[in-house]
Image (tube, rainbow, N blue to C red):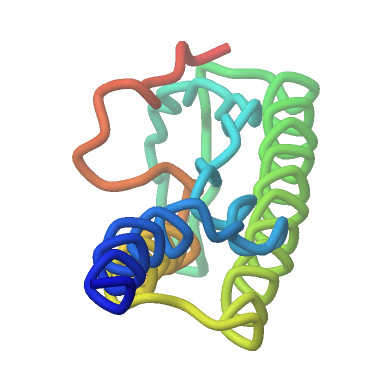
Amino acid sequence: MDRIRLMCVLVLVVPAVSLAAETHEKVQAALDYSIPFNSCKKPRSIVITANIIDSDGDGGVEQSDVDSYTINRLKRKEKRWQNCVTEYKKELLKDLAELRNCAQYGLTQEQANIILEKMADIQAVVMTVDGIKPGDPDESHDHE
């Protein structure tokens, strides 16, 4: 009789203990991870209308409706934007490594699937030119 009571208590207590088992803090951080907002704002493009004038067949002269100062300023903005996106992607790759390294603390299959999905999202963002997840309406940026 005592054995039956002991078995009943164990059957009731053991699942409760396993449910209450703590998840390692790095695994929990990986499960709670979300891709940070990309604050890099792509500069708007200036439409440059150019006419090629061929004088004597020796070559051409390019004319534009936009002055060189404006064109150079746009190039500087483009360069700053590219540097910003590069830094953003570097941080995402560090996050990717952290997500990958959390597996050493032991994962359930469900946790592994969640983390793999987050890693795939990071990879999709890193593979883009502008650092914005393809098809993500939340990440639409206003052009400067």
